[in-house]
Amino acid sequence: MNPSRSRNSSILFAAALSLLLASPGRTDDHDFGRGEKYRFTKVADSFEDGFDPFSFECLSMNSHGDIAFRTARVPEGGGSLIQGIYRADRDDDGRNRRRLTTIAEFGGGFDFLGRIPSINDDGEVAFAVSQFSFQTGVEGKSIMRGDGRRLSIVARAGEHFSNFGFEPTINDADVVAFKAETNEIDTFDFENGLFSRRLGPVTTY
Image 1 (cartoon, rainbow, N blue to C red):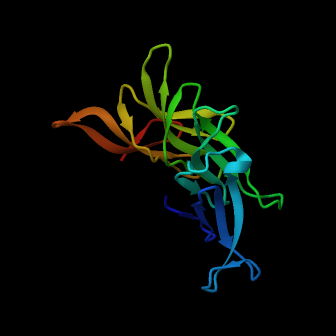
Image 2 (cartoon, rainbow, N blue to C red):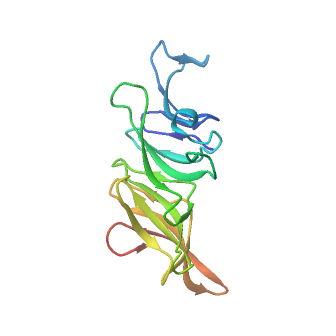
Image 3 (cartoon, rainbow, N blue to C red):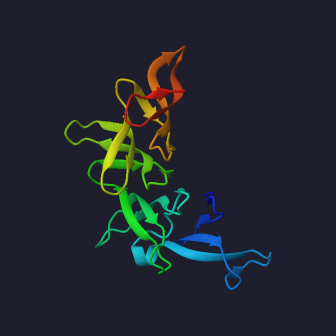
């Protein structure tokens, strides 16, 4: 898993048991022998927060230090792991911990969540998803965005798109860019392209 760096030179990486944020520190913070000091902030902890210790995956960070990541939690009473996308908000109360918000989880029809979520400075998180309809028996694919209170569909498979990439990106204007495979046949294969959408029509690049 690749680390993520923010504008203030904070470095984010996943450990086996915890998700940690390393920020440029003071003279009394951790020193790795190269004259660089770092302060570590616990973002998420597998034991304290109920996450599977080996499920922390790709993550992204906005300029405020808010972090979006995919992992899996252990359900109460045991059973299959519940995969989810979460947001860890910056530490504003001096407790050196982050406030966790659930963006989306398995259940309610979700059977796949994209590995690489993207977060903007408003805390909106964009990600790819597959949803299974128990009514129709059909699996639908889409690009979604959410803030922990509601989820919105940016684009879905259907008349125009047939499949999506796993790594959408959302900017501070709430525009979501994504890779998709269209239903238009180009020569002997389906055509791929880059697209974006905010509230209106989809833009093609």
